[in-house]
Each structure stands twice: as structure tokens, then as C-alpha cells.
Length: 112
Image 1: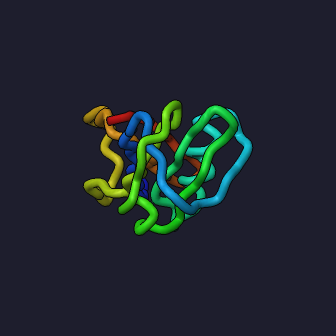
Image 2: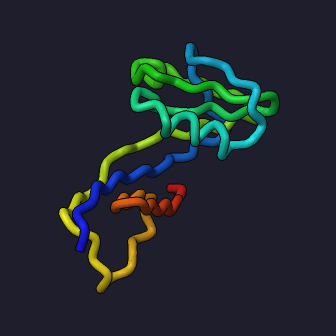
């Protein structure tokens, strides 16, 4: 078996919630905004609205959230249990996981 690195990404969805600050992007798909957030190690949340999204790179942005009709906030968590080897004996859990082996990656996404 090959050794691998396991990175878990889970999203907590908060309807009608936004936060101040952040960087606006005009992307209309949640998947585009979440992919940009995952690609940036400092990203902590995404506010998705009808005209685009805002990426938050500072956890203090989330201390003062407010009601925003039609906006959904997705808070990212990058924590998981780690193991040293990918087992072929048991299936992956329902949490978001990226298992990386030599030349191979796998991503499973779940929402809380």
C-alpha cells in the first residue's frame, strides 16, 4: 500500500447569513466559490448570494454575522482523523475527504 495524506473538508450551511469584509467574486456557482476557498488555505467561509460570492480569509469576519435574505454562508472546516495508509478494506465515510496517493486523488463532499 502507498502512504497518503488525508485532508477533510466539511461545510456548515447557514441560510440568510452573511459577514462583513471578505473578497467579492462574480461567480454564480457554489461549487466555483467553494473550490476557490478550498484552494486558499486561509479561507474560512463563503457567502453565496444572487450576484456572486464573498470569500472570507479572516476568522474574525465570522464573529459579527448578520441576516441577509437570499445569502447562504458556507463555513469550511478542514479537520479530520488522519491515518497513515489508505485501507482498501473499508469504504470512505460520508465526510468530505481527499485522499491523495501517487498520481491519484479522490474527493467526497458532504454538507452539514
